[in-house]
Image (cartoon, rainbow, N blue to C red):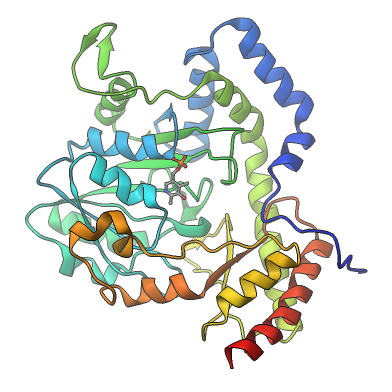
Length: 385
Ligand SMILES: *Cc1c(COP(=O)(O)O)cnc(C)c1O
């Protein structure tokens, strides 16, 4: 296949997905505008029903963002001051931010170097009498190793909250995320597996009490209008986003298949290009279904940043998720962690590089990415030497 060496390859292509569904999305949005039912309303209720069915959960509740979803889950489980929540240090800030926002204490546990997900074998050492919950993150589209996490949670009477923001549609041992914890939290940020054209999120649960509580918290803690049982906030999903998500939901399974196919192509192209000695491909566990929200390779030996820079200069959309682990963030110094506390997460931060992946990416685009990788890896090696 001829490779166009000048065409930019984006990290993901939100505009293309919109254009492919434009007539339907425009109609759905206009339908909401014309109906005047722009807050919650029938579109939201229908989306929640369909999304719950997709995830195999009894209840789904749309909310303003993935961050709102995490907060709703923590409030529903009565987690607050004096409580501790266990999470990995290598994730997006919202995971730890939500714990701190409810007044609880985050306790980090280092990650598995292969999947970047929390390492279950290190969790028990971090449990104290104040531990209330474990919050595993299904990073980059692959579920955390949930069976040992459940075993630990059961032994110590802890709740499990899934941060499934990056993994809508992923599965573990044949079960889709959405029921892999007491409460599961999703984000519909545009670049996620199921993304809207703005901000939105969702919580799912099989527990009717948690569902009822989160429904109240989403709407200023009120069950009866103007009577407030809890101090909630406005965590509602916009009806416009529910309508957009309803158009996209039937496509998400196909998109996940396309992401997986693209990941397979990268896997082979990287090997054929002879790059295996200088670059590590993502590890896929056979316990679950990886949805490849991100395709993340590792480049060690201090070459990553030079490589990132030259790929960007070459119009290849790359990104580093995440360049600084949470325990080293400026605003979290009060937690008392220091460099060296989580060496695996720290190493990942120095070495990971996400390559362009989205359902519509073509083999030709991927070939261009891998060709550029081959060229710039050689240069990066020269500079590092
Ligand atoms: C995207 C993301 C969130 C937050 O979602 P928003 O919708 O942006 O608030 C939380 N956790 C993880 C791991 C994420 O990737």
